Amino acid sequence: MKKSRIYTKTGDRGKTVLIGGTMVPKHHYRLEAYGTIDELNAQIGLIRAFSNDESTNSNLERIQQELFDIGAYLATDDTVSDLRSKIKQGEAEINFLENEIDSIDQSLPPLTSFILPGGHPAVAQCHVARTVCRRAERRVVQMAEESDVAPWIIQYLNRLSDYFFVLSRYLAKCHDNEEIRWHPKLDD
Image (cartoon, rainbow, N blue to C red; front, side, top):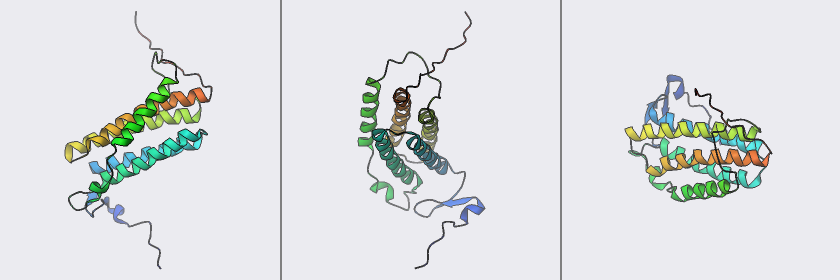
């Protein structure tokens, strides 16, 4: 059996193929959306690499699986493929994130100001993932203006960025990192 090549050379001409076979330019809004989801997934891999908390890493792997489903959904041209209709709706995953956020938040001191990103590498990486997640959300909202996007995807990404924020605080606590609060310079 001949092994297929990883490269197709269609990208050499600035084009790529969506799931379903539709050819689009590399700068297409759909690629911006699912490409940012892919970037987020890679950033989550770094959190897992820096974290030694088994429960956190298990939750992050679950999130990575969900993001692959979302990426496939966004990469599918539903006018020629029925893959979107086969991807399980993520309402249960939204509930999972909300429950995790609430659980983690209960174990943390009250938040009284903004926090500067930094500290332990896992903590800092949570902040990177949070900001990439916010960009992914913006790209998906932009895509939703041009084509149909299930509302649960936008809601999931919104909750996910909140999850990364509370996770950063939790991991800071686990690693005995002091949270550095923002002290604005204001005129009196």
